[in-house]
Structures are given as C-alpha cells and as structure tokens.
Length: 584
Image 1 (cartoon, one colour):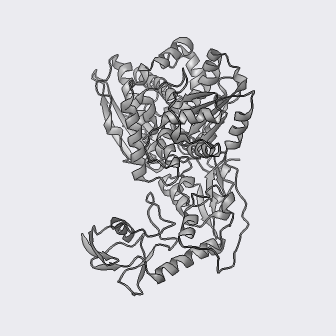
Image 2 (cartoon, rainbow, N blue to C red):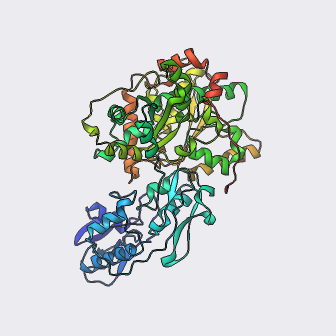
Image 3 (cartoon, rainbow, N blue to C red):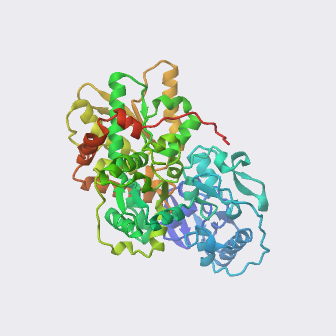
C-alpha cells in the first residue's frame, strides 16, 4: 500500500494501481479516449493527463499508464490541465468528419460526448480530411477509416484479445489510418467477424452492417410471413438501450415489441439451444461409446468456426457437426413449423436477433444453411443494437408493454437453453443432458459451477458415476483458445491420451453476453451483471434440462425421428473446410 493525495484528499491505495484507477476510488472521473478496461493501457490519446507533484507543478503524466507512488500528490483538474485536454480534443476533431447526424454512433460516441462536455463549438485548427473510402467488403462489419481517431483499441482487441491480427495501423501522424492486415479489403483479410473491434471502437470508425432496411421491407410486405427468433443473450442486454440496468431480464416484453414491429410469429432461440444440446450431446456420447475423434469441440459460435477453419483446420475432425442454435431454428421454421402451421415456406422471411455480428455471415456460410430447401434457412440476422434502433424508430415504448409469450412449438425453452448465452453455458447444458443420456438417470444438482466465471480457460472433470469420467475445457475470448488447442495437438503428436473429451469455445469475452453486437460500453462488471441475469432466468425455469423440454420431445416424435438420425443430420448438421487466411 502507498499513501497518496488526489486533489488534496489523502488516500491509501495498492502500489500497483494506476492514477486513473485510484481516482475512481474517490469518485473523480479523468477523461479518456484510448483507454478501455478490457485492454492494457498504452497512453495514445493524452487526454488523461494529470499533475503528479501537486498544484502548479510542471510535472505531467498520463493517468492511464502511470502507477501511483508513495507521497504522490496528484492534481486531476486545474485550468491548465483542462485547457490541454481541450486542445487535444480540438486536434482530434480537426482530422475527424463533422457528419455526426449521419454517423451510426451519433448519440453514443465517446468523442462526441467529450466534445460536448468541454463545450467545443469552434475549431482553432484547419480541418484536414484524408478522403479515405469506406470498406464494406465484409459481410458483418463496415470499416470507415476516415472516422478513425487512432486510439488503437480495435488493433489491440484484434491482435491481443482475439489473436486474429486482421487489423493494423498504416501510415504516420495525420496520415495514419486503421486498415485491415496487408491493406487488403476487410472481407479478404483474416477477420473472423466477431465484432469486438466495433464493440470497443469509441467512435464510428467500425460498426456492424445495418440490415434493418431489409427487415423493414419484409415487415411492410403483406405477402410475406415474417418470423423472428431471439438469442439467449439478447434478453439480458436489450434493456440497457432503454435505461434499465445490465442483466435486466425482460424477455416477454421483447416478444411483445417484436409483434408490434410487425412480426407475425415470434420464436425463441433458447428452444433451438435445447435442440442443439440433444444433437451435440448425442454426438458426444456416440463418439465416446462407438468411436470417433476426441475431444469433441463445440460449434455454436460462428466467429470461432471461421477462426478454426482458418487457423486450426487440422481440428476439423474434432468439430461438432451440429449447427448453431440460430441455424437449427431457421431450418425448423421453414421445414417443420411451416408445414405444421400450413404456411407457405417460400413466403416465410426468417429473421434472427443476435448478440453477434458474425451471425450475419453465418446465415450464408455455405449451402448447408439452405437445408430446408426454401432459400437460406435464416434470411437475415440483426444485432441487439439494431433491434433497439428498430423499436425506437417504431415509437414503441417497450417498458410499458404487457408481457407476452413466444409462439409454440418453437418458443418454450428450458434453463439449459438460456445459459447458452454465457461462457461455460453450452458445456453446463450439455453436462445436464449427457449425464442422462449416459446413465439414464437425472442429475441431482444441475448447477455445474466449475465452468462458470470469467477465467479465460476453465478445466473440470465430470464423473457420471458409472465409471465414465469426462475431462472438459471451456475457453472464451479468442486469444485464450491457442493454449487449449496446442495442448491437444501436443498430446496427439506424442501419442498420448487426449487431455480433454469435450471443449467449449466462445470467441467473445464472457461468451455471447459480451458479443460484438451487444450494447456499447461492455466491461467485466457489465458482463457479470448480464451473466447473473442469464442464471436467474435459468433458475426460474420450471424445466432446466434440454432433454426434458416437452416441445423438443414432440419435435423428434413428429418430425425429426431421433437425435443424430438421418433427418436430423440433413437439417441440423453441417460440414467445414480449411480456409486461407487471405481470400478473394
């Protein structure tokens, strides 16, 4: 511990804290632009400058990277500091487009907010525009380098958090710009479409492709039957866009809002998460008992699928062939529900609301995504942010709506379905049902806590109490997966027993609750709140195991046959291929 002063207030703090962290303890906000709690600070913008030797001292430091020291006398605000910060902002704005009203981040832009707080109305510097073109070659993410403020967040996210290396800086000074690796179009780069760059960008330099016009067109067409599904993580994040705390679960109000937007049928992806468990869980049991590549690796996350095909294609035999819940639902809507409801599947427009930008790409990933035989099974995918904009555009006061239920038979879900939204959730849901599939007995305590939490890699062993023990690993945040996969590779190369039987991977930190399409400003604290909301929804569910869902049982009895059977494979499974890092 060290003794310091912040604006004259004595304080004792841990000696490894930065000035920025210490200031928060006494409720002092030091402005930042390049800083983000998910990333190691690197003092790019200079807005967080403070004095470190008392009032009037010429000694300045950047609060985000400077550690506290014994007897440090810190001044966070005085006229000169404020003037310096203002000048930094003015310099940034002199090289930034002034088209806020047309910007996708208008009203939710960190630069715009700081400019308003500092009362910047005129610029003393000549405005310099580089005239850089927008790159919309990527099916999920749009790159507008003209709006880049060179804070470096997206580069650090892509390289250090995700280990993808699809983004880098090119040029120097006023001509510096963000670009995809090797300055190729973003759609031809190693990008895995996870959207974490967009989620961490403080301005409108990177954002999700806006597909809401296509959805509005379908909703306004009287000949179209618009069907929608919402993902597990959407229910604990959408409320933030309407002023409620992170983790607020208001699923039934979302159903109501979707109907008011014009969707004729509302389903829940939690149902198809239950379906995924039946397929993936049965696949695991089959591989363990009848032979097959072990470990089995989950395939619910499309960014992870893209990463695996590019970076770890030798692992394709280990990948579960089960489609993601989004794609299973799309196939079931056009193949099973349409027939059951006597709706022409060619008139169905299937929309998914996802916490993820990579889901946009997944809808058209390969021809397996047309398994129902009526165009793509999911026609379009929009993010949580896009849905929030649509609700606001339609003038729907969602908080005042009466609760409504999802439609049958693809709406009711179990607690196992809802925990797909968090890291470890797929694994926990699989354990709940795999135990039954192996032992024919129900699990006593369905809460499998070793896979919960924000630790980057979690390992555990499941004892099925019949002599079967399963070693599992859970990894989230793409940069953490290499340690797990390299461990598997090393054991295989040495001819040793595999260290794991079942591996779950989610590309985004925290899993889908921290997805690239979720409301901006996500931190670990917000991830914890959203996660708590997911587990609350699970605990309140009357049924908490996928195999116990009566509507899942009905779907197999009436239509699919048995898990991993012929019809299930035609509709609910897919294949993978090795991809080059750079493609055309």
